[in-house]
Amino acid sequence: MRLLQALFFPPEQPGGVSSMIPYMQDRFSSSRWEMEMFWLPRRLRNKGREDIVFDTFDWTQYAQSDIVQKYIQTYRDYIWWTRMRIQQPHDLIHAHHPIAGLALKHVFPNVPLIQTIHSSYERELVLNERIEENGLEHQFLVSLYRELELKSERLITVSQSFAGYISSFVDHPELINVIPNGFDEKRFKPVPHENEVPQLVCVCRLVPAKGLDILFKACAELKKRGHDYVLHIIGDGPFREELEALAQELGIYNETIFYGYTLHPEEFVPFFDIFVLPSRAEAFGSVFAEAALSCLALVGSDVGGISEQIEDGVNGLLVPVEDYVALSEALEKVISDPSYRYELARSAWEKAKSHYSLTHVVNELKKMYLQFDSRKSEE
Image: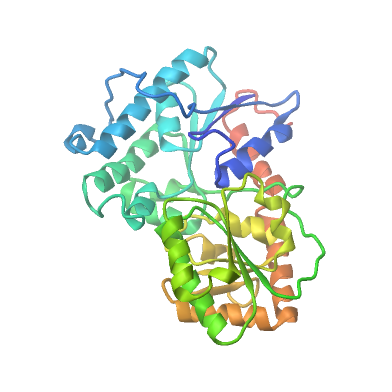
């Protein structure tokens, strides 16, 4: 069976998709399976000239938005690149971005499409103050959900929470499948270590949606209470300068290390003690599963896919969104009690191994893929 895994970003880009898809290839290297990856090169711009028509809505009512126009042009470019590079159709296409799925279905209308929606781009743009809620761009992006539903043989989301979110934008929410991201157990694994001072780590893009301002305020509270810690911030983004200034203002700059973008954080994350990320929205929260497989204690906001991964007090701690006092109290619990911290980390590791390992997720995907295989034989 010839599979095409269609991405938008090149696989070296940060994010849950890049942590999973490239590492699936060796799981499909057999006489039964053949898997290829495809994406739009970052430097490819303004090549497509296709007239764009959606079957479920008229996109031109949003055409006065520059963001919408850029999205449409990227869609045209993806179609152009697909026609340039893919000559033979595959047996099945599994797309991991709306542009990728719609473009490939446009070029190969008779090839079954499985579409995974990994995150709510419109919610992130609203939280990051790039677009206005219910504005033209927001309306355009949520309209794409029904178009994806029409064009896909299977629509997948990465959490029950996110499936619930998009249910109001589609006609048949009961048909949405939920398959979380999976992570290679060989890449994310515990490393025995001892840290005299508790080491907190956060891996994310530095944007308002991730709630790092809340984390910094919580860490300032910890310092006021006399707790020693080091906070490691791994990632980069447009919010970095503001965060560095906030760390200075709150008096925690000396306790905070900014790494910038790091290609393989899994190589040193296992040497830390506590993973913390108080996101304002999160469809799944891949970094929590990665940290759990590295056997770190988890502290996160009670939102989206995070609260599906963490059972409060069992395999991590959940705090209300925007509540830096509650976050500081949760961090105080795991900082001041190493035994409790280890119990949470061990439970998180066990759940992640059974639910979010790449082996488990690939097996689920293979079952789905075989439903579209004309030969219908097991590997």
